[in-house]
Image 1 (tube, helix red, strand yellow):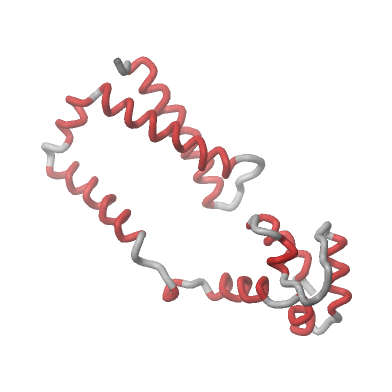
Image 2: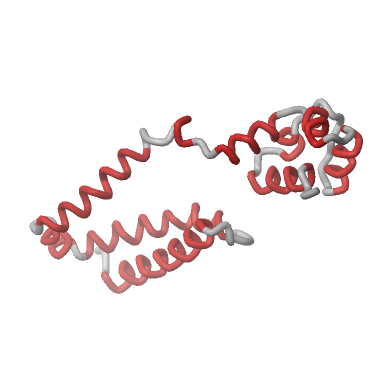
Length: 161
């Protein structure tokens, strides 16, 4: 039997973790394992909510007798469905597109855009701890698949003048 004695504290604790890590990620202030905790321990939130709903089923079901509750839940359901279909190419951030293009271009071309030699850019990336075999590689290839590493490599390749 599911007990409120553990379902409610599980929900509260998981919500606290999800809220704090989510806010930190939103403001790009997450550090350490915040993102991983948010992603993986989000399952604790799902389990806690399911357990809490099960333990409090009669009260939960009563909420759906009220028009306001139906409207609020319906609004969030519509936003969820819309999130799968809205966005695409029309909503692309120009700065993000420019950085994505630069990260995919060969290092030699990026160096030319900056008015410097490919050797200088390769040296800067290597000084930042990246392994670069030559200017034909892209910054994305050098950085690997992690977003944080790509941001670090772009920062090394494109320092302020």
